[in-house]
Image 1 (cartoon, rainbow, N blue to C red):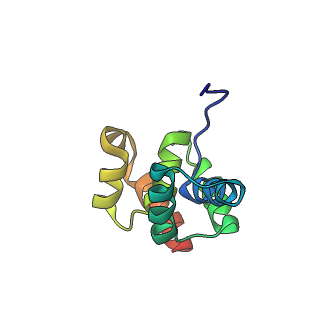
Image 2 (cartoon, rainbow, N blue to C red; image 1 turned 90 degrees about the horizontal axis):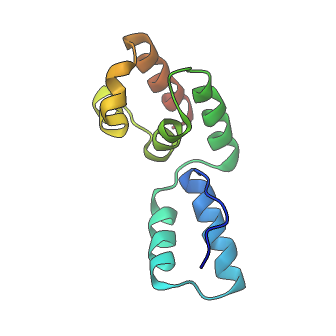
Length: 108
């Protein structure tokens, strides 16, 4: 297997990709497990996911990997956000943290 390209995607997109592959052929063991987990934990639809990504991109300090983590885990409070962002959390101001949490709350 050759890697042609690499791209950060939200869990919703990963779920959609696996569902498409499932229609084409039988999934491998790891893919089946991943799809089962994604079916249980993906809470947002496509429109909500893309709107949330766009809203989070307006916060300048957040990079794509941070945004995908936020969209995938949907942190509800500062402690959850700290766990999702790890050491990058300390680079955000209190205002930016509140802005991130407000965006998430608008979609959950």
